[in-house]
Length: 410
Ligand SMILES: Cc1cc2nc3c(=O)[nH]c(=O)nc-3n(C[C@H](O)[C@H](O)[C@H](O)COP(=O)(O)OP(=O)(O)OC[C@H]3O[C@@H](n4cnc5c(N)ncnc54)[C@H](O)[C@@H]3O)c2cc1C
Ligand code: SF4
Ligand code: SF4
Image 1 (cartoon, helix red, strand yellow):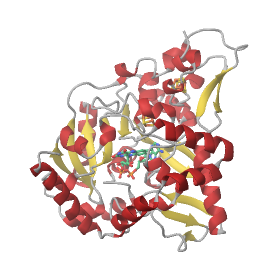
Image 2 (cartoon, helix red, strand yellow):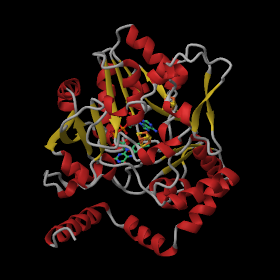
Image 3 (spheres, helix red, strand yellow):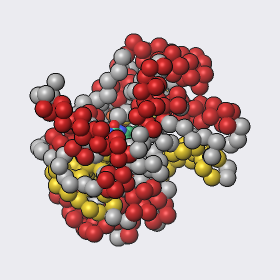
């Protein structure tokens, strides 16, 4: 028996984790790209000996076996070091955990972007961990990290891995429930391909007329949850490019869930039964949950945290003063965060058109789809919301929820 995708080529059955290629004893499997740059295993039939190792390695063979059942403990949390908090995507919890593991002699793995080369790296110092801070909304390559983690686990090192739920599932399937492996999964909407991201950066570069080194999807200068990404050029942050997230075709199409990998629309991990020991995401809607956060705290960012195992709980307890935590519930977190409960959805007909256009015309295809789908009315509305100061937006959201509650949720 071979990995489900390898035998029936149903794209929804493959998350591109590369565990099958790693497990193949004859090197018969290599990861290749489809027309949109999404990676899939390709088998050299001449080398395949039918041993079934790829099936054993594939987390999509039995995804439910990898999840933790029962109601997870839930928290709102943020890092108390303000400088660190402001450079993180939400409350800085993912990085705080990685820093703690490294400070205690362990090894962390996190996603680092070298322009379009977005991959998981081995992090052994606070500086290394710092380079993994921030959300990169693109699929990260974990192929090299898998081999490195194998060596680390075999040497007895304590390993913490932060990544998407499917990446964590791949590691859980490969390594089992090891005492020295801590998995931190993110709440995940889904991922576009690295090729799409590269095309987007190249187009941006042509537009800017200078080398673009990085695109920071989340920037909290104007507050958590504001739509202000940053373009990083040779000399630092580009002053010319101070636009909103919806001004960038790639970012807008990602946020609308229109350019995600096929598997993301049927993700078996977008549910309450988490695959990680700890799950971290943005605590959207926290201002209405009666947790008593002040405006300044809401401005700086709050993570939602779900804890599924005693190992996860004990790591959070050991973080002590470096995190400010507040008990909450799964239902409160799910109220503002659909992807913790179900996979992303989109108009699949529209998506097929966009994906087709991209396969044919690359970056130009994304730009055309963006213009066609992002109407003037929507643009005006998004611009108004984006211009609002953070405090006004918080009050507007609270009022909206209150009105909804009073009208019985209609
Ligand atoms: C593709 C993607 C989709 C997401 N969708 C949602 C969502 O729908 N709802 C929600 O609440 N949260 C979502 N998140 C999580 C959210 O953006 C934050 O990453 C999370 O809240 C952690 O914030 P932090 O401040 O604790 O992390 P930080 O301290 O900023 O650290 C970020 C951590 O994320 C990891 N990371 C960054 N990019 C990637 C990547 N491409 N692949 C794997 N790991 C990565 C890094 O290794 C690092 O450990 C998503 C994240 C990603 C990467
Ligand atoms: S999900 Fe991972 S292990 Fe399974 S076929 Fe795809 S790349 Fe291979
Ligand atoms: S939505 Fe699911 S399949 Fe897609 S990247 Fe996230 S965890 Fe993986």
